[in-house]
Image 1 (cartoon, rainbow, N blue to C red):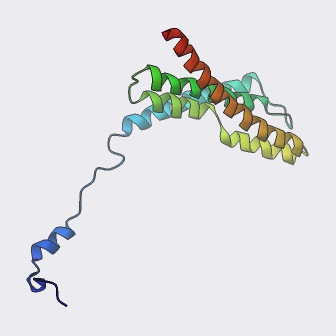
Image 2: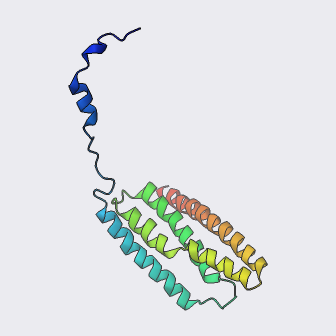
Length: 159
């Protein structure tokens, strides 16, 4: 069986397939976002460093400062997300600046992981496991409580 008009293939039909489609770069227009994330990250990291200077962890001791930094950061992101989704018509750079930058720089998963390893290496695996579980539970609870409280305050303020 033959395809009708098979012998009439036009060169222009094939040539159109060879023309690359110009798509905008995913990085186009992202310089302001990258800049605010970098500035926010510097602020958040400096705040976390300040907390570690105010409340230094003892060698082999329980890393309370990192735990509380992560919990507070989770509570702040909960309140922040309610504010920018339910209250403000925020500028497009607010979320990357504060959410990704400031709070991303403030909270720390890598230090959390290193702290667990150090507790285990210091012969305190039970403390490492407790820290692992306590941070996860407290961080999740902080987000949930902060979102719930922020929404209730908003509803109370509107009534």
